[in-house]
Image 1 (cartoon, rainbow, N blue to C red):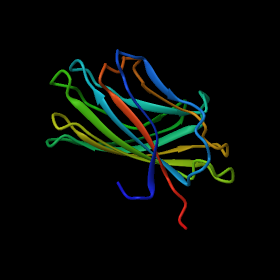
Image 2: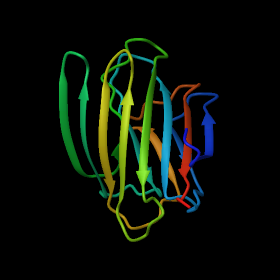
Image 3: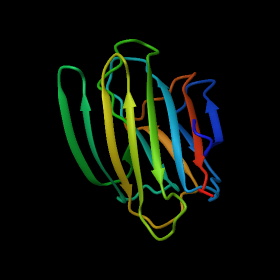
Image 4: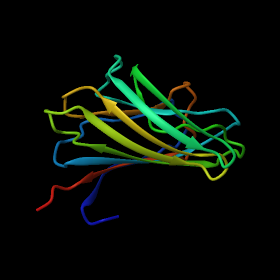
Amino acid sequence: MARTYEKIVSTTLGSAAADVTFNSINSTYTDLVLVSSILGVTSQSYSPRVRFNSDTTSNYSVTYMYGTGSTTGTGRGSDASFAYIGHLIGYPVTGSPMTIITQIQNYSNTNVYKTLVSRSNNINTDIDAIVGMWRSNSAITSINIAFQSGTNFQAGSTFSIYGIKKAV
């Protein structure tokens, strides 16, 4: 990664978990990058999502598009209690990783709503591009990641947060 990226925190799950939460994110950086490698378990559809600062109210909206190689789709959701960061049509191979890179702009700026741009892919199923917004002026100090369906993340899934340093 570029020299302006600095790893803030990283975790690899030792056992299945319903969610992953990163707390006490300081405001040292301009933007954040969340890198996730999520392992699947069945042929179900999964939709990983994020919540900021434990906010479960209807302050999130998202626009997405995806492609499978044979089909494409788009959608939009507003007034949701979370923002999607990926959508997977199914895991045909148990343990097949879904890689997600989510950029969170201006996370510590208290004068703007927070936006995110997320790209996800799984070599066996589909690719996605998502733009989301958290309609809050609060600085992001906590990020919670979970599947919207309540399915557990599997052992071996990894999550890392990088801070982008201010230009000097």
